[in-house]
Image 1 (cartoon, rainbow, N blue to C red):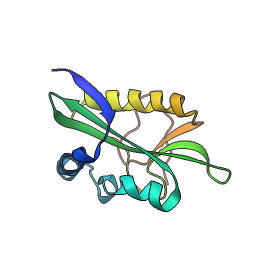
Image 2: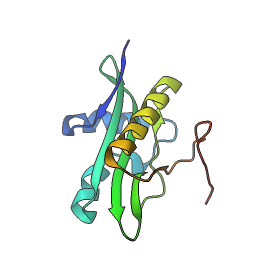
Image 3: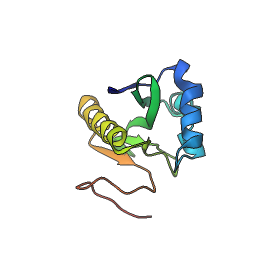
Length: 130
């Protein structure tokens, strides 16, 4: 049972949304429809990540690369929204999404990675309330 993290495709949207609606902590802000809004309305690049095991989604992470003078250079889940951090069915899927997000941060040259989430930050990660 191999765990794989990959970019979301349009074909993933129904399964993504089913996962979000059934996951603890899933919210309106995690739904796949936001993926197209960020580029269309704000000119930002969406990097929605899917964790899957044996073809079944076990986690999702809606990330957006925001690079501007006003907001800086960041990879955020999800900008302008109040929620949107990683959702995972198990610890392995969460770790795989965190690792993929850190790799994407390096690839995009983002200065920081921000998860907007009510779930606890992984050990060693900075967390703030408010």
